[in-house]
Image 1: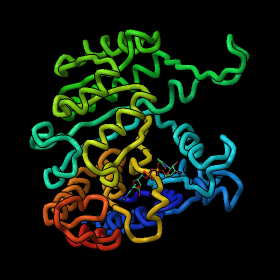
Image 2 (image 1 turned 30 degrees about the horizontal axis):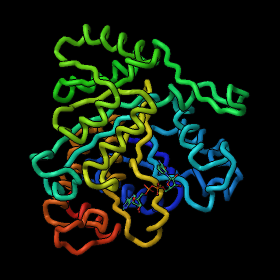
Image 3 (image 1 turned 60 degrees about the vertical axis):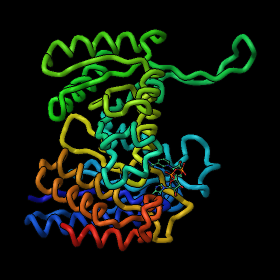
Image 4 (image 1 turned 180 degrees about the vertical axis):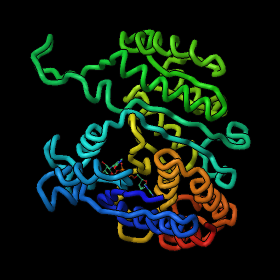
Length: 357
Ligand code: NAD
């Protein structure tokens, strides 16, 4: 099969980890007889340097003409003083909106080989956990009405959380469908005891649950959800939540797996095109030093094969190679912990994975 992949390398470690993933995807294409073509476009700080804009029009056009998008990461201290709408991170919101990507899938898996890396005690993590957070990505407070005004105490700033029935229903369906493909268990996390938008969210999730009787459905308030994630992560299979709660909870979930360098993500819309990226940032502190862990991006590439291209066997092949490399004891510096292993670099880790495909 032929697929066109847009590469948004971005800043910091972005180019290193995207190049590793391209090497893995090329190996998969050779092994399974596919043809993947890769076209790079600018995004983030490097785009600001070259064009003055974090998300040039050409990048949006190129992504819209591709079958899927692979993103490294954007941002860094060089661009920290840019005004709000010219910051590298603004490009992420822009490209998600332009591609109509309203779903963010964030798996958080604690690998057996990395159990010791989790900050949770052994009796809590048991034999590991594997959960999926389905986060709404283009609505809620990050996109609501905002501004400055004169209030009771003088100048004040405000942001507004608003969710429509359409937005809630479509993310809810993705979550129920995702649960059907996994262990048929879904928890919706909201703040329905305080927020009107959460009350609508909850009532629509209940309506949908009637359509999916096989899915064991429950609701949870976000404060409790944050606590339950560190108290007993195994209780969760799929979690569905709003944009802001998902932003926070998915970082918490990633932290309890022990390494931010291991976690992939997919952003999806109505069609098959998606954007795939690691959950971590551009790690400017280690950029260009061959210290980055490429696994999160490589696993994002596997998600692209699975969710956008329907290539499940190929995705499994990458995931198994990663499992094997960890079981064989290879570690980048971020996951070396007290394993006694000698840390290897981004390039060497990529080679070890390529050898196992
Ligand atoms: P970060 O995720 O870049 O780094 C946090 C820590 O984790 C650092 O110590 C870093 O070295 C380490 N780390 C991250 N990824 C790693 C990897 N693959 N391998 C090994 N170690 C890794 O977060 P930050 O320091 O808060 O942000 C740095 C820049 O990235 C900022 O400009 C921020 O705005 C941006 N950022 C971008 C995205 C994105 O592009 N999606 C997401 C978050 C932050």
